Length: 329
Image (cartoon, rainbow, N blue to C red; front, side):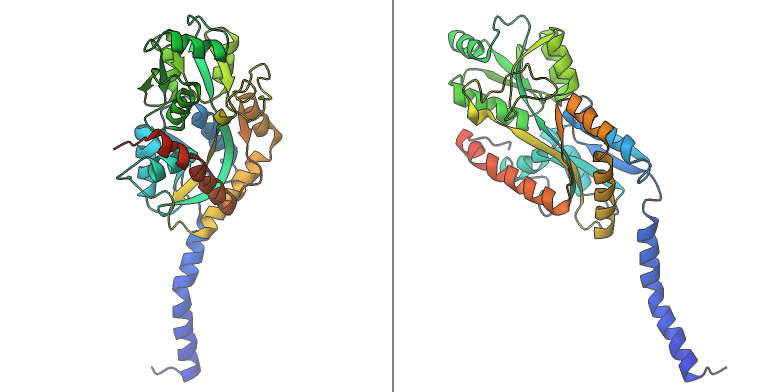
């Protein structure tokens, strides 16, 4: 049967709209299954302290979030896995300063391009580090540690979360600023193992990120935190001096922690996750949880703010990495 011209045109127009409607429907359905959050470090440490509560807080706003720790390469292995994942919003990275600095500055053959292969979603928090020692090390202050290291060249070693990590860079920066080049660096696969061996005495010194666990271990005497790298004293541990106030302003170091998606993830999905994150962080209980852990919540972040923050982090570390001559390959 031959259709009237007007009816035929309506049918053609309707058919052309179907793909668009289908795409919109798919976007509106997000998320329809659990989201995978990759933490590029082993369990334990600042990233876990931020990521696991985030997963709980956004569950009613998004969907179930399955946390997967994927350590190795100072965050490179986990971050690269996300960079290669399907850009559909179901694989998200908890990255930040570490994931950008690692590949942008420290690799001759990077596993991914942090700018081109990952799209920022939102910052969640900022973490600072500390200089800590095993309780048996005969020092009580940062200056005593420096004097001890100079008097006992080669006797001290410090643990960090992986070659090229911010912890590693901070340790090498400490050595450079204090004139203690003989301190030996010992790489681990994440902060958790560093803390375990520092408490157990397998290593005399470490540069872990500050968390509630680190603060409690300090207060219980199982390790001794000599200085933190924040610009001012921490609300959660005001008894801990900053490296800056002890005469080392160049040791002011903060690392951003936030969410990134594979490049090409739809803008609508990125904004949906960013909005859920802003809503979660606006909750006083979540803010307090982070503060109690020695971590600073990042309020009202968005993709562009986080992008600018990461670019600033890379710019900050670039001259330091160059001066130290650090390369991972």
